[in-house]
Image 1 (cartoon, one colour):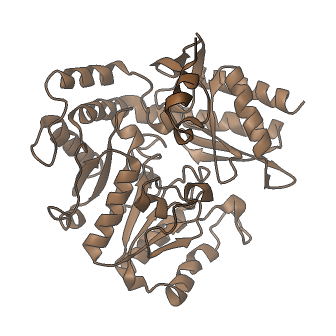
Image 2 (cartoon, rainbow, N blue to C red):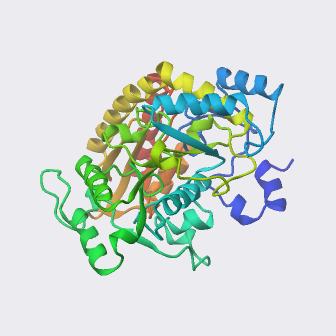
Length: 426
């Protein structure tokens, strides 16, 4: 009998089949996946960070089932329904009030919406993004993405008036780092940009991930994030956070921005917001969001009733212990990874917040070791642990367990990972 992968290759093009694995899965439960050939896998990928409360959480399934019995789709551009409004109420309260929210389907779509909002609210043309950023694959979001040229290949030219700054990746800083402080280089680059390339009063928005995802799970220094807020205030620029991957409890806070004490003008989020159901949002200050007038944006399936019902259940789970667990288990997991780094010097860096963690594989100093990374991930899969990579050179292993993960499951993952290093380095 042909496998799911073999069947897929006959009807799905390479863009949809040349993925991380050839696994066929039939069931997900908690932190585990079950394959079509009878294997049980510890899943530390979670649909690339979408299943923040684990696979098939019973409260999420019950909420979705109940909603499906009443209404599956009606169109948020046409009518209002309870799950949409209730989720908007709960999220805006959770972020401190004085906020409004617009729902759509995916992270890319939310970031496209964020671009449009920045331009619409300021009536300015330019957007600034960062090297190693990943904001999505639609034509607008792809123009903001600079984590790997493969994502942009054959699609030029993209949206105009997009400019790129260096993200403060201190491990790979092009200038010396003293006492762990953010070098002035990363702040001064904006003066150079404004003096030579784009006038600051032509910039509608600056979009940044408070922890870069696809680019390598890079956490910026707190002082840099505060500098960004001050600079945007000075020039009337919209500060936009992309919390597609780092939001919804992932980093041990409901939203990653809380780690820095900086409120953006608005931010995008997706993945974990729907607990596996397609859902995304743009969340912003009321004063800004009210400038987004009827007809300026829209979509057919955004804020689907079932997705919003799942989102409400997920938010309840996160606020009733999930976020606290993500912080506690994230700290424990990071310490275990730091112990592995002492044991295996090929781990050049251990980084991340909460349960959004990564280890970077290096050789000959800080040169990326993509080959070892691939071997480790393949070996881990053979041993029952599902992992994927990140970073421009795919030499960082990212760990994205659910916010509900247990200490026992983390210990299981670390034991497997340790044995993988033994095998791959022997």
